[in-house]
Image (cartoon, rainbow, N blue to C red; front, top):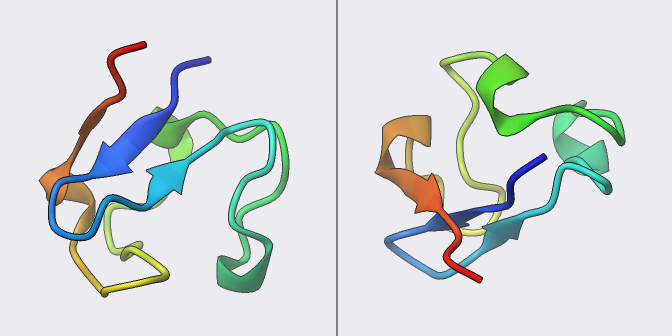
Length: 54
């Protein structure tokens, strides 16, 4: 599973951790998150995230 980064604030979504405060459980791929989910740091929409280049 790939990590994604918010292009607005730099928050990194790690699918192994999820977003517990946003109701996204560990092991949830970014692609499976609801389209109305927003960045927990800055509120950016999901379409403003890009795959993290490692």
